Amino acid sequence: MQLGTTEIAQMTRMPQPTVWRLCYTLQQLGYLVQSPDNPDKLRIGMAVLGLGQSSLRSPEISEMALPEMTRIAKLSGAAVSLAVHDQNDMLIIQRAQGDGPLLMNLTIGSRLPLATSSAGWAYIAALPADEKDETMTRLQPLHAGKWSGLRAAIESASAGYLSHGFVLNEGVYHPNVNAVAAAAVDRSGMPQYVVNCGGPDLKPKMLRNEIGPAVAGLARKITLALAGRSI
Image 1 (spheres, rainbow, N blue to C red):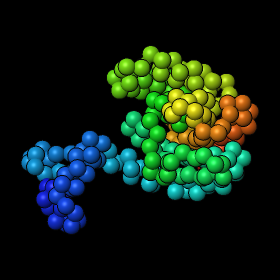
Image 2 (image 1 turned 90 degrees about the vertical axis):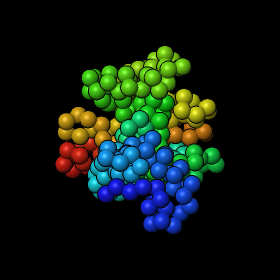
Image 3 (image 1 turned 120 degrees about the horizontal axis):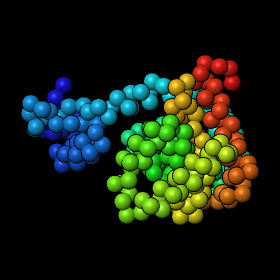
Image 4 (image 1 turned 45 degrees about the vertical axis):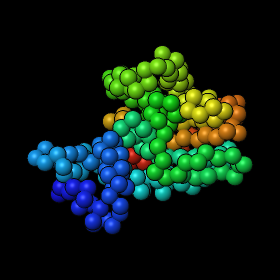
């Protein structure tokens, strides 16, 4: 199906300027593309397939993970997220809130930048070597002004991931916000889900000694579930 913004406005009963802005944003994200036959018409883009895959694969895993995510959230007083990779971000598909006084304003559907979040770092760290190199090459022009320091931080986090099973991000995503994350991989070794815990009140020592191992443990359980094994 191909539709113009005027047709979309008529169908949704939304103002034309609002429809134009929404369609422009969706085009930038790859969810809508111009029709090759008529540039005034829009059709669904390939990026929508990523949403479909997430919706198909996530419900059982996200529901299975929620009780353990809630336990970690209570332990940390922060928030725990389950995220999947989508373009240059990690998309949150499940969320458990702790009872701490300060919590990040993130919900299901929120995005975490691949290059600067602990969730993104865990995903990158778990990638096979060739996929990791390709991802880093793709991210470089998006962060050209600070790529040198950012690349060093990602590589350091990846080294820590190999040693401890989780990555630690101290304030790179947002000043004074520390977080840990670990990836769950499928049978081919590709990361499919990332468990992330972070917040303004979390101390690096607590993250290393308590929260990080708990997050890594949940990621291992999801890995077993993806392999069809009992958890």
